[in-house]
Every structure is written in structure tokens, then in C-alpha cells.
Image (cartoon, rainbow, N blue to C red; front, side, top):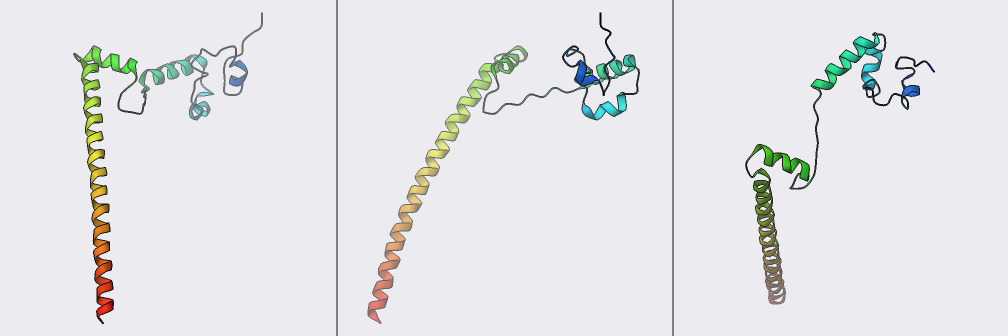
Amino acid sequence: MSEKKPATASNQHENKGENSGTSVDRMPKELEPVLKDLPEQKRQAILKALKSISIHQQTFSGPLPPPNILKNYSDVVNDGAERIMSMAEKQSTHRIALEDHAIREELRQSGRGQVFGFILGLVGLYSATKS
């Protein structure tokens, strides 16, 4: 049987294939210089403590969270997923109405600008011919 070396910063890359499930392999690079001289037992205890206090953050884009997170809302709040879906539908309807209104106003302003430009052109031609 081959003897395994303890995982340290220097031989960690060698053991990665053999020992990929240990928390030492997931040790942040910033901690390597600090923890490399500690005994393995203390190093593991520190890494275990860090793992227990670490914050898990998950991000997503769009109006709705992924289905697994949506299900968790329903577990915490009665009809949580249904309320979130309803909120997303209302927001979508509101956004569409705002965009329709904005487009209509832009067309109206564009038409007014053309009318005022035509009137200004006629006034300019009239004043040029009268002098």
C-alpha cells in the first residue's frame, strides 16, 4: 500500500485526484500561508468552523426565482410561490402598459414636432418674401 502524505499547500495539487472530497482541497488560497504550518487536526477544525459560518449566496436574473427556490417560498409562506407568480404577472402587465403609453406619447410628440416645423417653415418663407 502506498502511504498518503498529509495535504499541505505544496502537495495539495498532487493529492487533488486522490483526496478531492476533503475540505483542505477547497481551502481558499488566501488561507494557505496562514494554515500551512498548523497541525492537520487544527487545520481541519479551523476549516470546519469556517465552513459552518460561511454564507451561501445564489443569484438569478429575471422576475422569477428558479423552481427550487420558488418551492421553498411555498414551504415558508402559505401560497408563497403563487403570490410571487401573481406579482410577476402584475409587474409584467404594468410594464407592458407603461411601454405602450410611452410609445404613443413619442409618436404624438413626433407628429407635433413635424407640424410645428412645417408652420415655422411657412412663417420663414412668408417673412422672407415680404421683405
